[in-house]
Length: 473
Ligand code: PLP
Image (tube, rainbow, N blue to C red; front, side):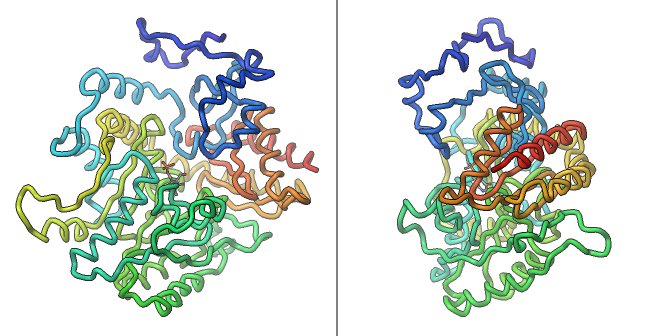
């Protein structure tokens, strides 16, 4: 059993009960019963339980495993811990809040932190997105936004507008709404019929385009693709705008392997939605609060949606919190619809919506993002990161493509004979063994280092990846 040396002094509270955490050596050849009880999410349980990778602590840009190894956190947790782990200000805010108000119902009551956080968030969103509903996750945020879209048209007297349109390879979490508009095939096919949805084609540059996210001034490096947004016109012709409530896209998708929108694509979607009275929703669960070198993807790509979902980085991953920001006109449509004062304008919410401890984490994280000028830091690191990841070109005949934007990159690997998705998995496992966490997803390997990474850490991460790719069969 390891005594976990907690990296943050504020966490060494004297009377805290200690947990016994088996070391990797104690687990192997496998404490099968102990590992069996937890059915792990989005994890190959068979593989993991045969060869567990347990993280027992974290410190700055590093995860610490059950052998005490420091592993560089090359995906910022799950795209959410850009500020690094164990930030004293967040730990203290959370500790204080737990001791002061550990829970309060968000239905029929309020607490000041949620109002304060909503105001702080709105300050960093595009002008006009100024009403925030909180959830406890990105999936809940996606489903909340989709429900708002349908309800909005209904309160406006256009109840036929129910269809929701997503994008091939889109990821909007795992609840029924998000899966219905989501376009990652593997996440859909076990679950049958969801809500009425259709999909735009996806906008990934052709394999081999080696897309660079920081185009030179002349625009070279951007790929054409605004015309792909015209596919929406085809869906409008097919279904009629009177049946379509909303279009939801990630401005830059992460889960599909960092798919960056072609130049003009998001603006074209915006124009078509405006022309046809369709709400445009940006899922900014990954792009929100710094990852793209701007406060939002909306800001990075210069296009303003009608609703914007967020989660992850808003609390630096420390507490589960998400939300939906909407145009004031959407909020007003519900409020202005009138009715008795006690009646609900929008019957929706979660026990943990605007949880006070999550809001405390959110306030501390937003303050740190601002104090550290995180978006600017990402903008400054992005060209260094870009040059480094693109130096991998040619490292392996199996490396088909590299895409990057801000502090995110996706590498596409060719399918291995008979085991199409094995290579990204192999790369991630070999990287873990070398002391680096990168994510495998579909046919891609994904990188999203923390905003606090140094250039030397980025060099080491990508050098290790290059070495791994060169050794790939
Ligand atoms: N939307 C996007 C774009 C995401 O990337 C994710 C998670 O990765 C989600 C929604 C789901 O968020 P959560 O896992 O917090 O439910």
